[in-house]
Length: 378
Image 1 (tube, rainbow, N blue to C red):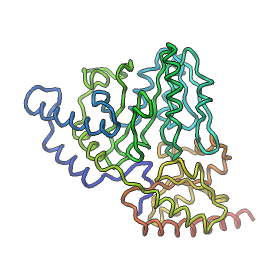
Image 2: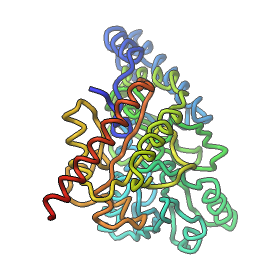
Image 3: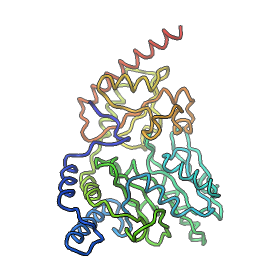
Image 4: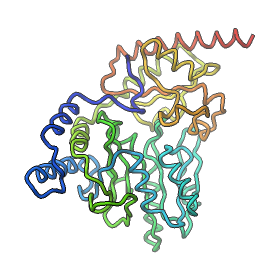
């Protein structure tokens, strides 16, 4: 199987598998225990925290290990905004953010959902216009999981700083699950207060993630028990997972934009009607979301799967839904256009030869499916 769905999940890197196996066999102690095995586990846990924090350019004390991106988003949003406060987010967020915000609304909170332009970008001035004295949190993803659009976090952070300087308690959270490990991420340069991470998006196993929480952000725990993670996340820490996550972070840094550009150039040269969803630039270097007019995106995914190639018609967390992509609809695509779109996301183990194979299969499948639809319609 040739795999081109890295935004859904990634294969575990061999080096990461080795680190996970060794950790599971040798570092099995409870890091809260004071005996030798416990302190050994604590040492490796904190070393892993330091590695991940180094990639973010933050203090290790500002990093909370979690089970993944969904928990990190829930902790960031609910841990700050529960209690009738106002939250601002965008229409293209991951369900882990949107559904958490809906739950806040059910509990009596207020949520404003900001739209985006046709490239999937939010306007910082629109966010400024909707901030009220009761706004406690703005949550804007760093990079979109479906089209790859990068958001203007620094401009939004400047708005937050201005309100905070005027005496308002307000914070900026970003879902960085798709961006972390693919683009340089310095939380201080970005000016964000909370940042969500997930290991399985960067060749680590599922079940491990993290949340950056800037010092003095009054985050409240949302699960209760022991005093783990500086009382921000109860539960015995997943030390092998943290060690595997750290190893994956050490391996980050490859740029696969050449593969993406090679793929798009080949497909667009042979299928003139195909369009790119999202911006040509200012997007993740591994993400290509293409609109195939007159072709079912689901049919394209199935056709390529039968040829031994894995791609996606949208977010993996929503792929079971009959509804078209909420991201593409927010960008102004029609329901039919959204259903005719396919996401291709590349990774470090893809080769130029793989890309040529994919491009040939996509062109042939698109032509065959379009012809079949014309025959059915006639």
